[in-house]
Length: 501
Image 1 (spheres, rainbow, N blue to C red):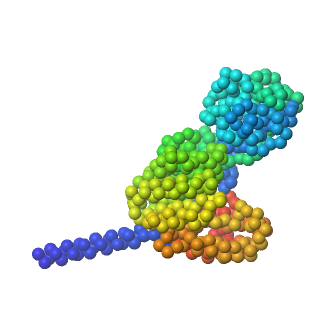
Image 2 (tube, rainbow, N blue to C red; image 1 turned 180 degrees about the vertical axis):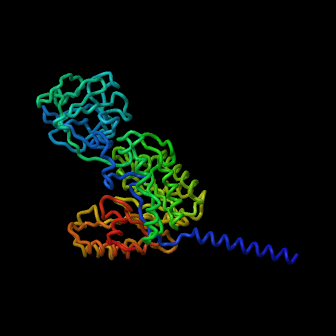
């Protein structure tokens, strides 16, 4: 009997050691030193512009904002009141009401979305030839072909669904019933097209290429296990991986998105485990777009996330991710949403979603951290602290860039560095409250606003950020690992001695 008890005690001790060792191996060593694997599973065109080179008419992708000025009248097309009524051509100058956002059907055919979000089309659901902007969902009568002049691609004619061209008969009468074919200035069907702005994100590349070419090769080659080896050997212990909502529907996500991102994320988890690293999953792009930026995979730049159905759809993605990776030893955290924009996303709506997302993660794991991103725009940086304080293992995420404001350009190098040591340090300290959430600088960069800088200036600026952001209790994540713009590429900065971890 004594031997039996002794063996049981020995077995229990052995199992407890194994369990403790396993927990130690899986434990998250905070604060994390991590890097964003941006432009991998969610495309951001500015980071590698050549990805778009093979797209026909690549300057007319989804979300491109265009204006059309009648060559004959020298007036701009515009839906009256920004949408909801007839199209006219009576504006001498162009602003937002005179600007249309393209929805690309193919390389030459498009829908035109107005300022108020209605689509331009033929009246009476295509039965007439007068132009109106009244439809909330584009159909065949809202389809238009942009025919470009070979000698000047910004000199165009617009063919409607009835096969005839738009013409400006008068300033208040725009119809689709012209059959001529000249490019003269007095031709009422000729327009001067101005491209105001473009978007180059996941939606644009997927819809610009055919599905077989969109981004599969890029996902297979942009980040490999060799990169994880490089990161680990240079002092990084985690990666933050931006993903899009369509990953939950892989391998056949809704059009135009293409499959492959789920396998890539699975690979990343395995590579992280192979090299002793942790993974922060970051839901970077949600259906409807939480900020209107290209990295949210928006189609046309409108910020439209926030309805009850949007919240339910996004929670379903979190459920998919938590169910799949909760027990993976490399999982550190799940970020519920990247950079929601104020005031479009209200605090009330965001907290309601964050509560539901947190509850969803907790169905599968009590150990993984849940990351709550602060809102961009006019918002209090401490607005999530009270809510987050009632939750366990949560992190409030902030993004710090000395960019995107003229004030940083007016600062010299030392003033930008001082701003890190004083203002950023103060901002970060304000997020550290007793028994509150952890703090995480989820994005920062080696670039900053001062126009002229030396290598030593960049080194000093990076050192200041590492010093201050190293005080974040959850850690930091540099944006990004790879980028054609060198000062945004941690790999390049390490290899060229701009930064030492």
